[in-house]
Length: 281
Ligand SMILES: C[S@@+](CC[C@H](N)C(=O)[O-])C[C@H]1O[C@@H](n2cnc3c(N)ncnc32)[C@H](O)[C@@H]1O
View 1 (tube, protein in one colour):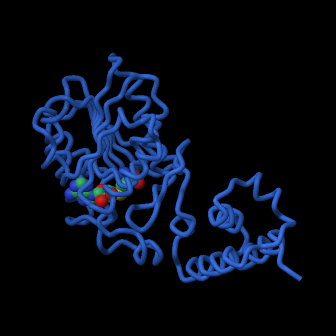
View 2 (view 1 turned 90 degrees about the horizontal axis):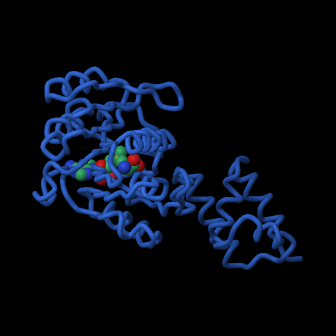
């Protein structure tokens, strides 16, 4: 007797120890949504599907993050393609979009220029562009060829945002067009900020790009560089918004003050951890 999708789903749920991983994985393999999958539950499973599912279950059991196995991940209202070329956007980072939206709404302008440094999957620009009612011009920068590739793929999947977002390969500000000096109303960055000695999950170390995670000077090197160079690129009434580790917040306050930023503030994430810094130009 042949296996049905219902039996396959039960088997995968047991193998993956519950959660919704099995549903999510099967949906991705079948390239279908949940409703369609439910309609198929009593149909016989295709051999190819069975093989593919078993391969993915083995990969997940060996530590591959479920997001990479599935190949996509929800970030606010956007479904992003994610694979080993980019960091899996963290749920904490969804909160930086809320903070950025607050700043955008506060700015007394209808057209806002934004720079996202270290864009990875393009999660922040895509979320901002799809949520804002103001006209945004967003420059999304990354130094990694892999990240640039996946950012471009994610932009391609959102054609209505093509006119809003420009992707630029650059090490922070290094290769940005000089015409953009003094033009950004908001600079956002979630740079690499982990100390090389930090305790990090094995699956993160084994599968996620290290260029997205670690920074010299106990995690502070890239953040410090961004703070020291940002001002020149910012417009008159503008904001710098950073994601960070709670161990670095004092150093951020000090560097922002030293570089002439005003009203620097540290803000908690949705889990009550100090995670973001906002500074006014
Ligand atoms: C923590 S990840 C953030 C990715 C994405 N913004 C997010 O929030 O999920 C840091 C990103 O910075 C990029 N990066 C690292 N060094 C960089 C540099 N010197 N210039 C530009 N981007 C850099 C990495 O490739 C990575 O995509």
